[in-house]
Image (cartoon, rainbow, N blue to C red; front, side, top):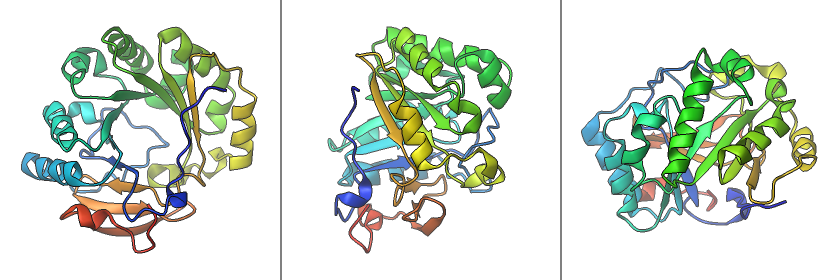
Length: 270
């Protein structure tokens, strides 16, 4: 199976995260039942977003993924990407539902090292049943626009019972669309996903499903188990840092991000 090196944060012994997710926006045009976001979080304004971007540019972090909410609703998204990249330390990606990607892909091409598009199925019947009418078609148009601009595209799906049966079809779709990678993310019981306990698969079941896939040679594959998500760091839209606990079943900390030093962990792991 082709794949990127698997980096498990807790195994690195770093005092700062190797990678993190920044969610500068709470707003989203879709309402996905497996969403991790706390929609009650205050959303900071432009000045504060730019300050956080500068903090991340100064941090010893290898990868920053800008997510949400839906980050393509932010007019200043290219500027945020540019600021984070200016530090010269981080590869910067964007995770999106794809609804607005076709019209914004060109302005992101100069700044994004990769774009991750979330799909919940290989066709409109499956995907739209979770994310809403027309969302599959808009996502596919966005993927095609990004691929045409030669932006590395990763298709990702939240792995749960209702998507597990379609996993092979989604991998095949990713290959047909010209994506460079496919990622399956084990559902975390955080945010609205706490209402879906029956949808959760064990990590062992997820590994078995993933191992059984027929993977095209050129497609890079990644499975993020819940165990791998332990200690992962997220910067919320209000400028506060949260960190998953070691099991990724709860949030273990919450404090303001004032400088890069606030990303450090007491345990020396990220």
